[in-house]
Image (tube, rainbow, N blue to C red; front, side, top):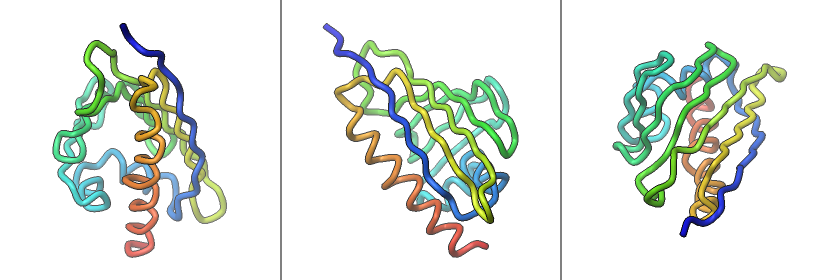
Length: 135
């Protein structure tokens, strides 16, 4: 029997303009550079993305340059029988940086806690470190 699903919401400030934050997530070369692991992405609606050496697989549903990324998203630890989550990243200029609002819905509760900390540890913190070095 399936367990329930939940939604993760995170709001973080990234120390770079929205266009650069968007590019860091969607450009496989930059994505690989800030995470330290191989990424691929066909950056158009319907295009496939992988990250962390194929640990994450996603399909781009909507891309609005510098403003929004919506994907079907799951990883190698995803419980069998569950559909992908929906990842919605919205970017808004805030001072010299970006306010990033991430909402990931339809996450199996059995993996939600790991994903909540994983976004901070494997994405937001490394992204800020990357932009501190690449102004």
